[in-house]
Image (tube, rainbow, N blue to C red):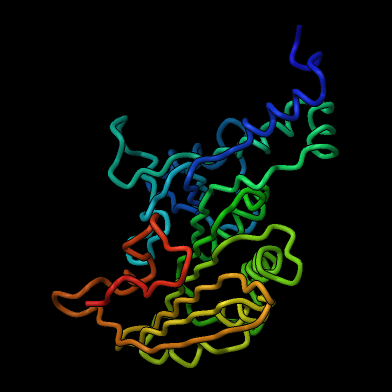
Length: 294
């Protein structure tokens, strides 16, 4: 008997168990380095094509584990495509599809069954760690179905001073993600959203509160919730940490604290190192202050 000859009810149970991802998934984009010919082959060889929306010589990366390197602002992930066969220290694994998206691609019948009948039970176990801003684009274009089983979402990255008044597409993607998970009657409710965004520059503090800043986008698209914010100000940049948890009555309960950010000078962390929480991939369901600053 083939799989498709099994009763539909049994197939749906199998889908339920098969479509569970790991405890942590990291989504981002890596810069490609190396010799010219190797770069051309990596990007265009074997009928490959760059992902529209990413900068030149960048490729998406979706890892079925936690990777602080993929989230890093101070030491961005790179892949040396000319490296010898031994794995380089900053290697990032290639993109993969989620189990659910792979099932959807198998054939028309399975796609129709999943789309029509399949409803995942409340067994969300995955924490999504998303690089900002490029990781949001990879998330939306390569693996949007991951949000269906996300228990929590953790965003880390930097937001340089915009060079144009036009809002970046990543901010639109952030707004959609927040609305879908923590908006009014969210389609994919989660237990917690965290965002740690670093604004480079000694004069960056006012940009934290601009209408087009990631923090403002999050606040506009949250419908109620326990919203805790920490602002870290320093000589070389500013960081904002936003933590959002659902409120049972959809009330907005907001708290904000300010801290000193020490970085960039002799014996201090590299600028932007603050963006990745040292406690990750562990996280608290309730609000907990971010990792102690030096």
